[in-house]
Amino acid sequence: MSDPLPLRGRLVLDLSQGIAGPACGMAMAEMGARVIKVEPPSGDWIRNLGAAAAPGASGFSLYYNRGKESLTLDLKSKGGLEAALKLAAQADLLIESGRPGVTAKMGLGFEAVKALNPGIVYLTISGFGLEGPRAHEPMVDTYAQAFTGMMAMTRDDRGAPVRFGQPLIDALTGLYATQAALAALFPTEGPRQARRLDVSLVQSAAALMGPKLLEWEITGGRVQSINPPAGIYMASDRHLALTLVREVEWAGICRALDREAWIEDPRYASFALRNANWDELRAQLEAIFASDTAEAWSDRLTAQGVLARPVNDFADWLTDPQVLAANAAPVMDLGAVSLPTPRTPSRQPFAAPAPGAGQHTAALSDEFGLVLD
Image: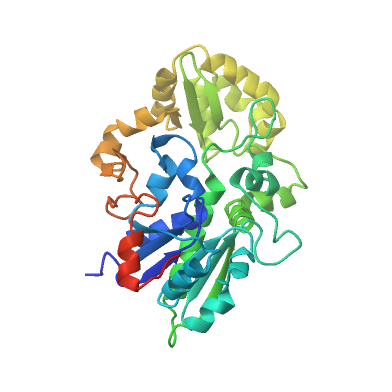
């Protein structure tokens, strides 16, 4: 039987802040690595992002710092830099984030670490990547969504661009960074050589939207709805999500809505034609769906083999029998508080708490012989 903790015995030095880098560090910890998170004396700024469960403990920091040890260092000081280099010399993976070159100016760049550790995997997560005229510009998730075209692909009923509520590109970049790091940590031939990995928010977003970018080129720049009338509709009580993936399902929708005449209507005979007549069709659908509840429409559509569900909030999802049966979000001790926490797909619940800023500074200093200012 394979080891459920394949990174057991590996040491990760997480110098990153925010979401993308810490998400990668958390994934490493979940797979068994020892992850030392280095934070400035004031703490990672993610600790004050969003709602706070306790001072210095936001939902983001509690989630993405699970399983780590926190060491506070002033990397601009001689003692802080020397301590970080001492840890980097023993690490398997170093994670940095932010604008390229900032960490190097502190004395912790790839070349400096490589000289001490010829087998280091040095992961750089940035907004635009290591090369190009924008490489040194700052980047946050909202900017990434705007820059990469994601907002242009996601619009509200008035046609205005919409920002995804969760920092999606940050989280996705963390996943791509984890994939890249794992591949580098386990070379297929010979001993591991020092390697620098370049993972950016904009390239991660582009990879996510690859099919839509190809579609943009294929259509000459037209933004189309995917498989209309798939979409979100307001029923009499709440929103309803409707989708279809095959043309045959259009007939099922027509029957569920008591609009059998639409099945033979030449305006709606294909995805392309429904896209061409989308404004008119959507207006009719909105009026129909407003006449009954989302649950009632879901039942009628499901009976016709069409996928349609009321739009859940988190309370709906957490109490759903399927979620409970799959133990999809067990209550976990996160350090400052215990909360329902989604588990990573394919893995058992990762209940290791998130540390407070600098919680392990004294213990790590003793263990590694760090002399701090």
